[in-house]
Length: 497
Image (tube, rainbow, N blue to C red; front, side, top):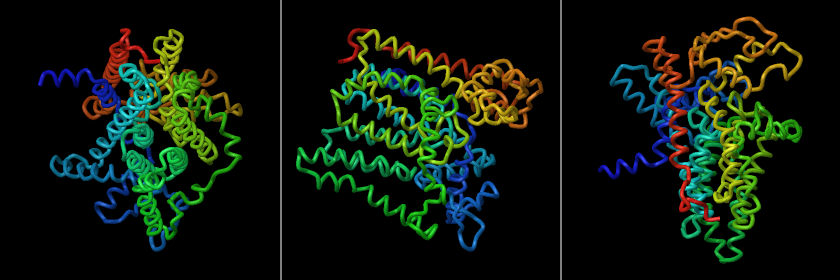
C-alpha cells in the first residue's frame, strides 16, 4: 500500500492534476458553455434540445425553428455526453443537500477539462516516446507543455479546446502504434469524438487518409485500413446529418446559420500575420516555448517523414481554415482560442531535442522562462477581464493607444497583487487617464480568479486578498518544484539522440 502511494506521489500526473484543481475557477466563465448547459437540462427535463436564447438578438442569428421562439444550440453535440451526467449529479446533490442546483452544476463543470487534460498529456508523452525520446525527458517535456504553454489556461476554463486536444493527440498517438492491428479503428474513434465536439475537424481526416493509402502501397491492405477507418467515422457522420435534419430540416445546417460558411480570402489576408505574432491573438506570444519545436524540424524529417507530414498538414490546414473565418480570435478568450489545439501538435517536435546538446537545453529553458510568467498571468485572471477594463480607453483614434491583452493583463495582474478591491486608477494602465475604474460590480473580477478565492466571498470577503496570494504562491511553488524534481539530471536520463 505504501509503495503504491509513493508511486502516486512521484507521478507527474498527480502534481499536474493538483495544480489544475487548485487553479480552476469554480464557476462558468464562458457564455458559450451556457448554451450546452441549457441543452443538457432541456434534454433531462423536457426531452427536447430546444432552449431559450441567452441574448434576445440570438434568434436573429440562429436558424428559425417554426412554431417556437426557442433555438437549438449551435455547439457540438458531443459535449452533451459530458454535461448531461454532470447536470444529473448536480440535481441529485441539490435535492439531497438543498444547495442551489445551478451553483453546483457550474462548480462541477468548471473542472470538467481536467481529466481530458491528463489524457491529452499522456498521449503527448507517449507520442514523444514513440518518436524516440527518452522516457524521463518525455515526462519533463510533458510537464513543460502542461504548465508552460496556453494549455494550462484552457484546462482551467470551460472552453472545450482541451477535450479537442486530447482526442487529436489520441489519434496521432494511435497512428504511431504501428504494432496494434486495430490502430485504424482507434484513429477512427478519436476522430469521431473530435468531430462530435466540433464539426470543423473534418479537415484533419484527409492527412490520415493519405497516410492510409501510403501504407497500403507497401502492405497491400488498403481495404482493411479503409474499413477500420470508416468503422466509427461513417456512423458518426450519418448521426450528425440526421441530427441536423431533425433540428433544422437540412443535413448541411449545423446551427451557425450564415456564419458556418463565412470564410473568405479577405479574412485570411486580414488575419494570417496577427494569428502568429499579435500580442492580442497570436499563437506565438502566448506560448513562446513552441518556437523551440521549429529547431528540430530537420531531424524530425530525417527520422519520421510520415508523422511530420501528418502534424504539418493538420497544423497548416487548420491554421488556414481558422484564419479565413470571419471570427476575430474565438470570442472573449485568452490569446487565440481557435489555434490552441495546434500548440501541442507543434510541440511534438520536442521529441527530437537532444538533451546532451547544451545549446538545445539553454534555448529550451530560455523560452520556458519567458513562457511560464505568461501562463501564471493567464490562469490568475478572468478570461475577459482585460477586455472589459480596456473599454475605458477605447475613445482614442490610435488603435495602439490601448495596451494589448498581454500587456494589459500583466499590468492588471501586478495591480491585483496589492489591490483586490476591483477599483483601479486608470493611469495604472494608460498614463493620459486619471479617473477611477470600478469593476467591483463584476463579482468574479474581485481578487485573483481561483475557486478558493470565490469561495471566500461566500464566507468572509476580507480573506479574498490573502487567499488569492496563497493560491498563487502555492501554484508557483509546486510548478518550480515539479520542474526541479523532473528535470533530467543524470547521464542515464539524457536523450537517445
